Image (cartoon, rainbow, N blue to C red):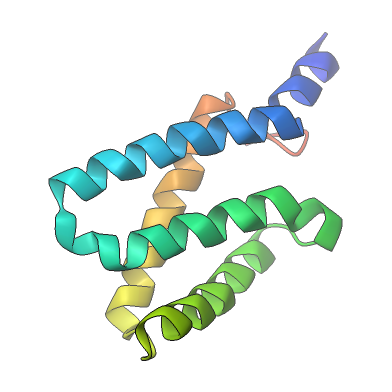
Length: 116
């Protein structure tokens, strides 16, 4: 029974649901704090891209964050023509860490077959 539940909660379809909920949360944050929009859109897009693809890439844990930071910097630089400041990178990382925490809570603490 628990294996079936883990498979359901960590399925690709469940990940899309989690991403939709997380996008809603970010939308609320953007309405409340409009100045963060400059980096949140990029951060959420990169996060969603990594969440959809990380298994096929064979990356887990801190490797996902490393991939996020590299992709975030590249996308930010492409969009705004300047490298993001350390402060912006740290804020984007904090946003993603909070989204991962919320994602884990939604999944009941079960991610990749492990009870976190």
